[in-house]
Image 1 (cartoon, one colour):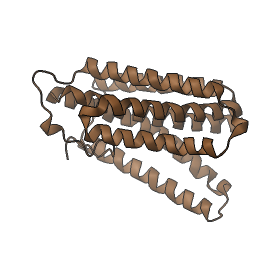
Image 2 (tube, one colour):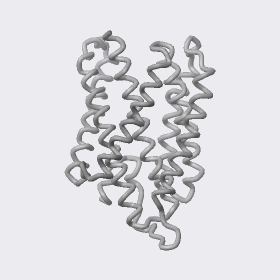
Image 3 (tube, one colour):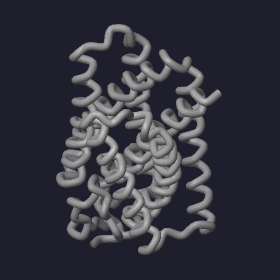
Image 4 (cartoon, helix red, strand yellow):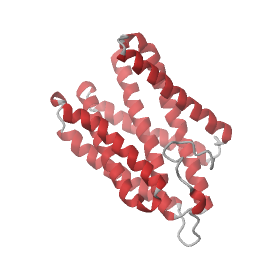
Length: 245
């Protein structure tokens, strides 16, 4: 295992063969590429979200909700396996992820007003800033135990979610899992927040290793993937709070 890279997006990457004394990855490069990909995602999401009609949900929309994240996932895997084409696959990832987020955000806006999206966005970047502060000041240190624990939590969330999905498909009323669902959402928000620390630590380690500059795309994408996860769970959490009022 290379620096605990159990994240499915990163596990195929072999960084040991990418050292470059002349053109290595830098923090500025990661920040610049992260900002660029986020800007593309935001542009696509706003463009689609502003024109999307929730009342017109059909097969094509469902296809987008399923197909867009699948394309984004494949693009992420390819980026980390073949870093030299990351400049292309990262744009594909950002476009696909932006399309997905645009539709999802429009749906939440329709049912809960646009304030829920605004609050979720502010909370997402607020949490990122807080986690970056905790990591940069050394208040929280990312060690092997921390990584193993967080990946165990992630595995548990996926397993419980899969069991609930199977139960619903077999006719169990979703209301029966409502309390469990709330707990899962809360835990998932916390887990996504803590996974940002792992992303920051991964960026630090790889930059310090002097990996090739092409890997800046994969490092940026790993951070953005966690931010998307956090944003979606914050939307779910805010929706739950809105229902209970």
